[in-house]
Length: 263
Length: 94
Image 1 (cartoon, rainbow over the protein chains, first blue to last red):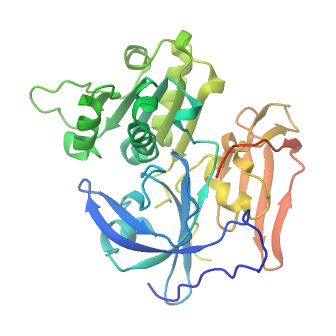
Image 2: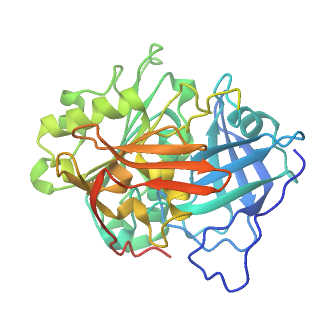
């Protein structure tokens, strides 16, 4: 990537203007066959809330630009911003981020964006998180934030239902295990949708449905705050199931991403 | 532009960056009333169609176009005819 230029910031523009910044890759971690986490150094980063996202803009040598949105996977407590990117075939941005970007590489980024799909411990709970595939990224930021808040975090009951294609496709699997087995940790429930689960599998093995959500989620009377993130069909199904279980639509927040044309 | 480019997320929330080029407040939490059916939702909950050259944000209830944004050589073009009201609320963001 070349030709990176930050948008000029007029003097006295104030802090409310969302400027393009230069992000530098400082570390990359392979999460699964298709998902990679990039840890970024972003000079001037103003901080964020768990659940927020950034816009990433790549500029080719011929000036062609492509822009995509990615959720922040790191909690506000950690200075290095982390993005977990799943490579989409034929994508314009995700293949470079997931496969090519190396420490020292730079690209343009603006954020944090969106208070709609954001949560902090001070907002309370219970917290019901439902994710499909790399949709777990913003919800992981919430669980990491909860863990970083110590006692105040543990006071918020939290559950995560994560749908993955196969055991090998589970993003953050070991960290989720650690979080879940810690005292006061969140309840982590997995479901696998494509490949047969390994022997001794303690999770589910079908797509998310009403019965699963009723079993895993809090009762509607507990009035959980519900965040659902994943591919569009999965989000629609999970949101419909949550409403069918009896959860108030107004407490359900969704973030969809499409595998078609995106990436 | 030879390729159709759409955003990888399909809620109004994903257009938050574009909306911040227009509004000084966090529009994703701004309560927006559809002029067609009077349903009021946070802008982040509208359905997002296409982004980059612009965006169309549709009502999740009646599918009417509530906000239309186009990036033109002369600047950003905003059509708010589908929104009866937009109420900016504090999101408590940093």
